[in-house]
Image (cartoon, rainbow, N blue to C red; front, side, top):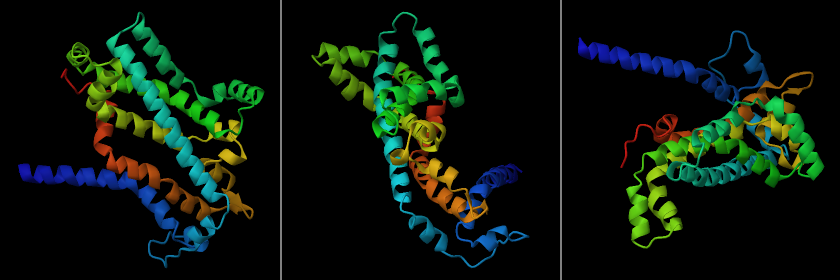
Length: 275
């Protein structure tokens, strides 16, 4: 009886996973269909696959720039955010300045603001300072939005690392630089990876600010999807399915490689006890 219950449990898990994966599988499968096959009724599960959609996609001159922009903006912004967040979280965790809890709340409240609520002042500021259509300033903007969530994740991990490590390092003549980066940081590596992945997904999917404060030279893949959705008087389903299939490769690869750190990151490090 227990074996049957276990079999039913895993069968249910597989069924739920397949249901959630079905839309992604359909998009990828559609990228190998012709336009007529995509629009066929009833939908075709069996068809003659074609690579023409991918050939047409990569024949677009701007596609390589848009992919490169997505990669550079995402990885650059998240690396900046993780470094700054780690140092800030270390200060909050170890020195606990007055009003730490309130400051942490203020940090997280930045992520509570919807993008459209702040886009106008941000646009006016970027135009006034000449920052529009700049990889550096767009990257720093994404880093600013990524820092609060990263601080929350990393502070939870750092609170789980005993201060005895800091004291031992200082007593033995180590500098704070040595303590922070050589002693403490290796112990919160899962938190750093979790913060990196979560923020990478956010920046990778961001469209609104790239469209408004970006420009021709900073167009990313979501921008390409928005402007290429319609063509020849209708929805360009072959472009959408093909571009989306290319678009999901990076986050899927990162999530697959580092999936064990994501569950830990969701708990903000609270699953750890003091070392």
